[in-house]
Length: 454
Image 1 (cartoon, rainbow, N blue to C red):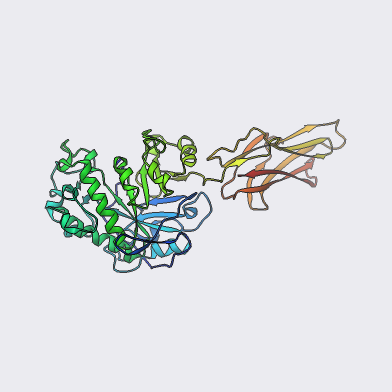
Image 2: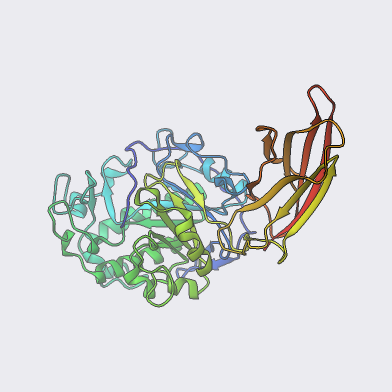
């Protein structure tokens, strides 16, 4: 656990099972139950587990163009916030939230609090106090997170897949109650599960001790059980953090969710990387970096994209306030080696539109720098020309930028957003409007320059 969202104690939403065969092939779980593998490759993900309101009302539109949440191939939302029961209650049927995610062609991950007990959840009474120490126990309470308590995972240490008799102590009840949560995810129509809080052994409790004296082996056993049980419920399983167990977990889970591997310079990939085994296996790795730690996409997107990691910048609350995804791999910007230059003349003015030759095909670049200038090429042959406006268009689409008259001078340089453009050749069109003196009719010149998204 690195950063945690401060979720409200009230939960709810909606649902509907959806057919979902296009994103990936069906996989067979160790328990003999089929489930849908998550998409891998150049994807984006959207993560929101503390929406301002439960259900669809608290989430952004599920469809949209890059870089909006609707462009993300993978959505990760909260089990209870997605519930069809009002007030974020226990689900009783398919979720309208999941139905909307599927209708938009996206893969849906169900966020589940797995390694800790949180006061205010609708199924709180299902757990025994011995599972987490009881409310007010500072030896098990998460440091900095009141009313959230680490589960006693010591009874999972010797778990063998498919053999419930290898669970001991509190692990027996914890497993029973968590299995219900995974079954509710399936009932909602979710495709996979992100089980959070797996690494209690790396944290200190509110009283400054390791909760339950847990060890890495305890979490490793818990993670073996999670992978088996989530698959047995017909769902894909995502490992959450705990990179120390990643080498063993990568063969058990279908993907990984990590937090701030760039900020902490773990590293994310390569020798000793948090997610290296998943990347080597071609499984999706979803990385979140946070604005509260001073992160920006310019600091980590290039590295994430180069490693094959799906990265995005969020606010730590995960309430939808910040979402800046890294550009999908392959959506990087370049221009022909010598650039492109187009000229047009109106009376004594030569208008020049150019794209630079220095722009590299760099991961995460989503803007095209252009220059639009005018020069006097002869003495005035008519009434003085005055610049009125310039409108910039990409591939006959909507206007991406409009520059109005400022002291009647053309904009010397500007950057245009390339959000939503697919790899391939594209055209920039600029319509420049002049007029000859006050009250005179306008004159429009059109210039075009090519560039390439690779």
